[in-house]
Image (cartoon, rainbow, N blue to C red; front, side, top):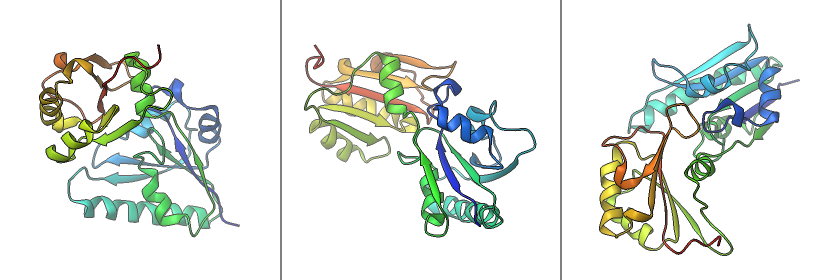
Length: 233
């Protein structure tokens, strides 16, 4: 009988934000798989490091961070086949994913390759959006208000149009796009409504008004903004 593939959301970085289910599955794992930056460490593994059993088999998916999708797809192809081999041999595999597996999560690429061949369980995780809102003390939506989630790499014109038509906005994957995003928000007169957050829940976390944000931003950074009066009052 084949093993079960478990895609486990780990939350934004603080190990205490892992769910009880995630903790239990990882602590009993036979095989653990996770992505890492090519030649570097795995953020997902670092979150779960204190829970991973000694001697467990580890499958590393070495994913290049490039704008060209082909190298990353090849890395997930290779990793998925190694995971498939373990599953076919009867081992359960826990695949670690920072954040939530199906919300910009790396696990969705493994899921797409293996879900038709093996039994899969997906364990949701605390998202970066809800974590950033909590750390900034900034409720994002109430009653019938809409929340718009935008990726930072969007072209400037599209970013502007989508922010203009939104009520409450979360801009993810800020990174090297910070100045473009900051410029768009400034041109729309919304700078005072925006908050910058990086590495939410980690010791090096930064939370500040957008106009006090640093000149450069890491990949794990976000901008939150709301346009109207505080809707929760």
